[in-house]
Image (cartoon, rainbow, N blue to C red; front, side):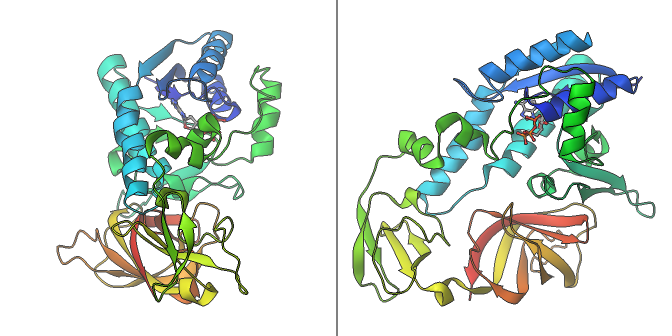
Length: 356
Ligand SMILES: Nc1ncnc2c1ncn2[C@@H]1O[C@H](COP(=O)(O)OP(=O)(O)OP(=O)(O)O)[C@@H](O)[C@H]1O
């Protein structure tokens, strides 16, 4: 049976993904995970648009109340991370724990369907030699979302379709108009849905974390000023520190125990390597020897040449050291490091700490 459950956020990408599969002859079921209370792209407004789309296509529409799992897996993860002085990346965690696995589970258990699809810009291929599912960057590099998908497991990749991976965003918009979808003109959503819903990360966090004044210090411990909560800072940050200095100052460390933000000059945030934990090897089996790759340490950052050195001795490769060919700035604990060879995503994990 050619059945597929398509994750609908109410935006143009997932609308076109659903319409494309529908046109290709798939038996499509629309599904929205209700993630947040209040307004927001995937919430009240999104659900109305998604329901209307399913009506236009003449396909069934389901909503799964996932607010509790989102709260536990994402809100708590973010708040406790910022409280501990790191800058967590919620999107890869959300994709893995809130979206893909639960969607596939719902499709299988409730609908008897063994395939899901989303409007992500990324591609899935199969290694002909090993049968392993591989993740690749989207053809449209300006929209590529593979970075957020590094934590997906083989079972999920084997049962997922990304209908937009081979096309540009401009083509998606054209198709939306051609299909006559009411979402064709919807504006681009922000990268982070929580920011869209709350205005900024700061105002989101301020709802959960009380302001707690503390010192801003230099590397020698000298007090340079005051901050109003370590969760307002991120490593590598230059703007908004609020201290006048001859040379630009960067946040180079956050000491949650002392409630201190540590600042220094550009040289002080340059790093030659970092340790990455909770690694997921996607397109290749965990290597036993160092490999050459290009690593991306932020969503919008350019991938840079590096060597990935396995550290764990159990052969699982779940902890690695990434050595950059050239020193990098803004290597931020909590963010994802994802390494590629060309467009092939080899693996990724969470940055534990940065060395210099
Ligand atoms: N709440 C949700 N329920 C089900 N699927 C979702 C939800 N949010 C996002 N998705 C799926 O994940 C894909 C990527 O989501 P993202 O938040 O990055 O939106 P996007 O790239 O702006 O896409 P869109 O234009 O469809 O909103 C969407 O295209 C959709 O298929």
